[in-house]
Image 1 (tube, rainbow, N blue to C red):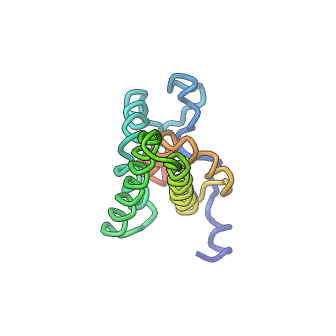
Image 2: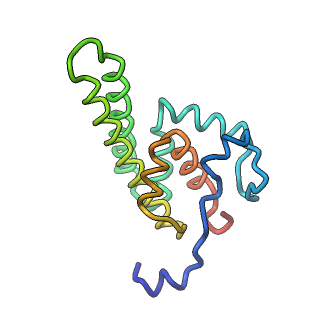
Length: 157
């Protein structure tokens, strides 16, 4: 997409859900018309804490990635998360395991921030890469946000 086409598209101020709505019990005063209900959002955030495959797969499909690559990408990111959790759990077993666990967590943040950047670009949402990295640090909430965005109609969001 060239810069002229991008300027002609209407830019949105944000995703259809806010990550920090969790602080308002998922009942924000400024909820969009296309925002999912409280139960859906809580379940998505809790599920993404351990199993991010679905959210990543939906987000990759929403940005136009083919099914096979979206599945591979989601499987790799899920594997990185499980490796980080496993290494963190085994820090007493060997020296330096915690350092490698943090490395895998940073790789996870990088991957999720990149996917969030792709979602922002495809839906023409304002933001920058630093926002994406900051959001990815709270990866269950960022994944839930991307999942809800991917499930919504881009014309209504």
